[in-house]
Length: 177
Image 1 (cartoon, rainbow, N blue to C red):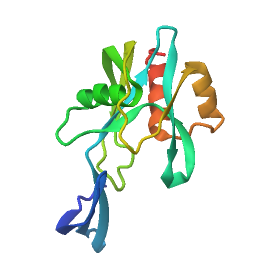
Image 2: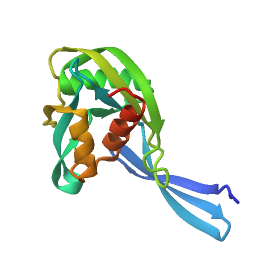
Image 3: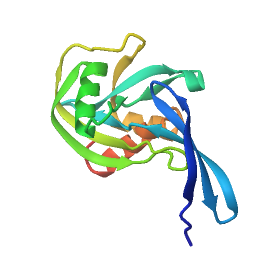
């Protein structure tokens, strides 16, 4: 049985450039409780596929885990921006590539227990190369990797980024890679 928690009061306790945190005091089946919720504008993930079937991957340092990660290109939506617009904008900014064929694959909530972040995965094909336009604080290396090899890296635990795992495995299941 589900019980809808009613908000008694709510306040923003942190606001930064990527997300904000809202503290909710809620009525639960056991009385009042606190729920901290990360509010995020969402984002898009791109499975960019070359003519020969290779996947464009990014390698970048992730401070939260103090390590380099191999990931699909992805980016945060600007306020009010449609996910498809985010996907095409971020692909061009981070990789320099433009896709003539962009199709939605799947959308999901990566951490529904404490965040409203909504992510959207797109398959991107018929690519043409342009210029990258990275943010001043971004450093991203690009690699083209065979889809089978990426799946091996996932199975070996060498790719552990959730959005990348979902994107690659769903694109394979959908017959796109």
